[in-house]
Image (cartoon, rainbow, N blue to C red; front, side):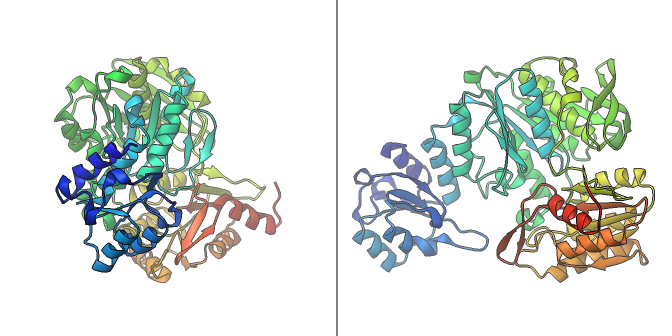
Length: 534
């Protein structure tokens, strides 16, 4: 990024006038910029450092340290102390105050990497549950149809070739990582990118996605989640709606008509339809639904794609697809979970719009689709009961997955789960109530307690379970490894033990420590110690 571009960034967001850019007597033209930085641990000589007020830490406090480390400029939103100004003058560091550091960072990162999003067809997927699956299925359909596409989600990232684990623990990365990824995808000559677009990423508070205009977007569903960040359910919904407000044509990529894809079966479908209708023509808003989740919404058009006659087995799901007046019978996916049919429908519609073809042209690819890592993963070591691992951690995902597991459970359903610390507290009793509704034994444990009291989190879940059932057996074991041992130790012939909440994740956060964790490995180790074998 040139100095002139940096001036434009700061001019766009600064509180002061352009004549004050050379704050404290320094001139931007005299500084050398080697890169952008928002993480004090990664500062390098010549970097522009963006000071951010975070939930737990205010990096304005580290500005003196950043100046001494060789930062060429400091972008900040809080007023600097006189001694900090004096230090900047001494080290000839340019300081510019802006209204919103995160906005300035997002714009600067986009410019630094050459606005790669403008050269790609951007496809976004939002919702409470099903985002990662819908992203992954859409990407696979595009690849199978011959499109050079990439994706990133909570679970994984692909630059068009191999699928790599996403180790960021952020579904929508921060701007420097986000635009670095997009730049690599552009440089790999990809044409399409499918990305998980979270409410955090879409929020004006973080401004992570403010510089991206999407050409196609999908809404999966909405349930209670992340109110610790958004404050209210309405704010949460509104931030997700930003994805559809950001739909825009991309003539450079030959995508003249933006598309919105909406789950007609969700209770919030009408709200998202109306939000999309504010700037899209009706023919560019397509609805899908599954017979598992039909709602009476007469104000909405009929679904463009509908899945009916859904039959699930332990290893696959079969269904029929209705496209307008025609029906394609005996469609199938080779992994479990009837709830996945909704995600597959969303992916089919998204991919068909990207390819400008009929859904019927893509059905042949369904049997070869691969399921998402950490979603309804069976662990089989010869034990006389079923063991499943899944990422479900919201009331919406519990409401979908638990009845389906219970429907095929031969004996008791033992559910092992917790709820994340420093996250939405209101959902905890909801999770407990849903688990008590479908399970016969609950083992409550840690998910990622962070700096919250782990026993307090468990008590809130337990209170919800007790509201539904006074008698259901509940074990409270904060240590997740010990909870796994307890659940598998009490499992009997024909039981199903479901471990929920960690899924694909590779760490567990206790206090301020991020410790390695792999749920499947932990479960396998316990089963092996009990004498079962591969």
